[in-house]
Length: 448
Image (tube, rainbow, N blue to C red; front, side, top):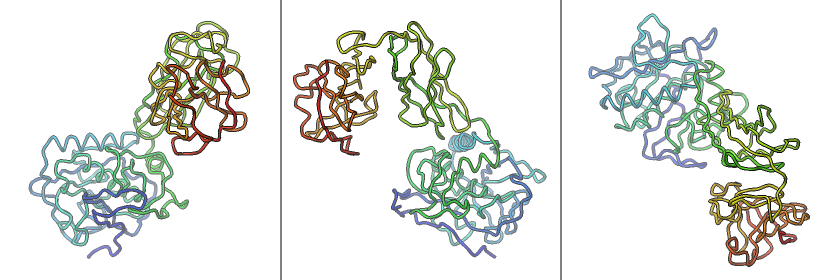
């Protein structure tokens, strides 16, 4: 006896219209079953990772119940052959699955909880044909109903060799099918079929569903799926890791000017919610948009101060970094900056002699401290900073403020500019933002 409706079986060579499906990799899938009435999800907070021994894992057909080894998607009574990979591979798999589910209040264990404790079970071993005959290309399989399936048994087959990342990807996906999650098209998330970074982690983002092409999500009611928030809402928070955080500029101990810019690198395996700027224990700026750029407000007195940057992930887990700064008066194009800094709009910023500073040659925005790498029509590419074309001296010597839109511009190396010279004029009426958009130059002014 078998469940009649098979959902999401995709050949390993499938190619997605939005990206490349994981070619030459057996793909996990799910099999739809009739939903069961659950009084209150979740019915357990424990996942048992069952490493099939040499004698195999025995499964019989019936309503899902890990405590009695019954599975709604088994072809009658089945035996999955043992998991043949090494102890080292198993340990890496366990560590990866635990890390994937660490943000949530879920326990991952490879110790059998027994027949009295409710739990989800994930069997690892065997071949897909040993469970049922109609999923020959599956890397794993799970029952699925858009709702929690209490005591569900899901599977990862021993078809990846010693590749612990692929084992982890499949196991994490199949376990989550029992929580009501379907396939989606974010290649960073375990619920995807698309190749991408490994290991994959649940992402706090609203994403289209699909296997190899976009489709409307069946379960959410709003057309998209947020895997991270679904599991968080179901189980509550666990022990999320803090974001990675670094202050790119200013450097600790340097003199800054009114309205100085703080640039921050912040990343998280799930997602950064916001970045905040604090001066002497008072929050003065906040942003949710990457690249993270925070501008200091008016009213900061001259003299020494403590600058702190805080980054928060989607669960509010903070990371903090602190530096010392000295507030000085506004700089000018000819004085007020130290070392390799140059004055832009009254603020000292890293100049062309600093890696990624203003005027440095670049190929991508990530190579610039400003995160702005622009190209003119002749192909010259430099790191730039915003300036005011109507204000004389808004750019340092050897730079011109080229107007890009009415009332706004960027500092661009001017002709004959010595170390900052691009070697030729800006070259035509368009300054190209690395192929993303064209900025029309309306006027050019020489910096003081």
